[in-house]
Structures are given as C-alpha cells and as structure tokens.
Length: 418
Image (tube, rainbow, N blue to C red; front, top):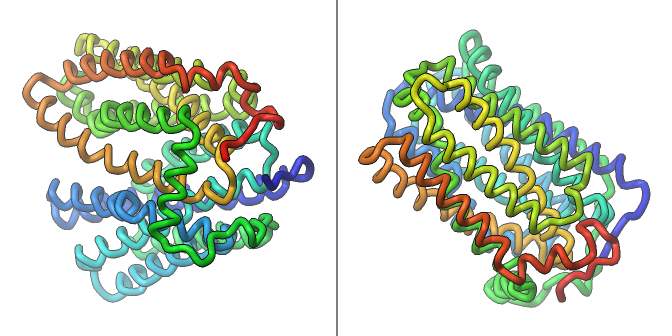
C-alpha cells in the first residue's frame, strides 16, 4: 500500500482547509435554497423533492461512480467534481440576474451538485490514505467530522442573515468561490497515484463494481459493520428530520428553540470530532463504535421520556447525540481506509454511501407513518430503545469484535484484506 510516513501534515491540512471553506459555503447555499423554495412555493412536497434530488443520485449512481473514482486519478476527480458544482452554481447565478430561477432549474442544479458530491466524497476518502500514514487515519477522520460540524453550526445563521439582505445569486457566487478555493488547494497538493498495475483497465464497469463488493466481502468484519450500519441508519436518520417536530409539538418551542437543538447537536458533533482527532480513538474501534451507538440510543430514549417542561434537558440530549456521531462514523471511515486496499477504496466508499443513502428514505417513510400515530416523543423513545439494542448486537458479532483483538487502530503493522 502507498503510505507517506512523514511530511503528510502539510498536504492533508491544505486540502482540509479548502474543503472546510467549500463545505461551509455549500451548506450556506443549500440552506438559502431551502429558504428560496419555501418563500416561492410554501410547499412541503417541493421541499421533500429537493431533499430527494439531493441524495438520490448518490444512492443510484454510487457504485458506478466508485468505479470511475478508482479508475482515474483521484486528485483530478476531486477537482473535476468541484468544478462541476461551481459550474452548476454559476449557471443558476447568471439566470438569477435577470429572472427568478424556476423551480425545475433549481432542482436540476441540486441534482448536478449531488452528482458532483457523489464523485468528490469517495475520492477524498480514498485519497486520504494515500497522503496520511495509517496511524493518523482515525485522527484525520476526526478532523473531517469537525469540519462538517462547523458547517452545521455556521450555515443556518449565516444563510438566514445573508438571505435577508442579499439576492440568491450573490449567495450562489459565494459557493462558487468556495468550490474554486477547494479546487486550488487540491491542485497545490501532490496526491500519489496508484501504480498502473493497480488500475482496472480493460475490465467492464460491472466487473469492477463486483470487485469492489468482493473487496468489502473479503473482510467479514467490515461487511457485518456495513449491514449493522444500514440498520442503524434506518432507525437513526429519521430522528434528524424530527428535531423540529418534537421541539414544536412536545416542547411547544418556536424557531429559536429549534435553532438551539440544531446548534447543540452540531456543537456536540464538533466536540466529538475534535476529541477523536486529538486522541485517535483510544485503540478499541469496535467497542468505541458500539458505545457510540448506545450513547445515541440512550439520549434518544431519554428525550422521549422528558416532560414538555424539560426543554433544557432535551438540548443536553441533542448535544450528547451529536457527541456520539464522530466516534461511529469517523472510526468506521478509518477502519475502511486501513483494511481495504487503495485501488478498491473508491468503489467501497461509494457502495457503502449508496446503501446508507437508500436506507434514509425507507426510515423516513416508516417514521412518518408511526410518529404521527403514536406521538413524536414516543417515537423518540422507541427509536432510542431500538438503537440501544443495535449497539449491543453490534458488539456481539464476533467478526466485528475481532477488530479489538487485532493491532490497535492506527498501528502501521495492521494488515489489509486482499
């Protein structure tokens, strides 16, 4: 495997800084588009469609995109993806100068941005092990989680402030600049290329997709982790959409209270990401991920048991939920980067992303059906109990638990699956 044992910090942090700027500007634009669609249509269906086109391309195209990420230079894939996102935004901004962009055009731009992200995310995850040594991968994942948390904290308030004084095209221009900055920082960095013998030239895309699944299946622990993670996402993801509902219906809160819960969650996630980045995950990945899932479940269950007057405790629970996230997703990312050979990482990350993305709408449909009938607070309680059970089951699976019996996560002598 290709590894840089020294001199990795400058290239990693160069890319990381550019991605942070781009992620924040993208999150601001995403929120501004939600404001725009709400203002122009007032339709929940339109907002739902916007969410759908935001993740569906990734879910559908992910496996084939992963093949392309592994087949070509990951540095150029990231730059091309950022340029595609910038071009889509610039087109919408130019149209916005003369007319209010029609809803269909906004949807098309959201779809193109989603496709660009579907290329960029696995390419970045697959490129990180080519830059950083194995013993630093968990810390890198923690810093990436922190970067995402900062965007979650900054974007709602920034988008609301900018949208109140600027036109949509000006906010789009900020995102275009952010994407170009991300392109420039990636361009500055040398990312090692895979040797030609590692490339999959001459094989069909279907065959290469199968090779990606085979690479994942070769490590039973990673495959079991993916299946358990899918089950976890089915239960956990709908809760994100229900924060405003439980705040408004059960705790009788308004927009300010809803903002408190979102900021608390993102702040907890930021703290968790920083702790993971500083400590590297304490060396027992399976136990850490299991504890993370159970912390999420306990916080959800307590939230469902709170009285309507206990909003402050709910905010604390939201912070605890956010705190748990990096210790699951960040550690999982580092395990995949360490255990899967670099030439398969693009396909593996795209495949896992597609499976998780497909789990989201199923979970949202189920939660929508039951939360309205039994009450959103009771749904939090039931979801919390189910999540605790998933966390316990997660650690009872022998192939997952074996990760704690191997060399600690980050040990440069850990073996990669063939």
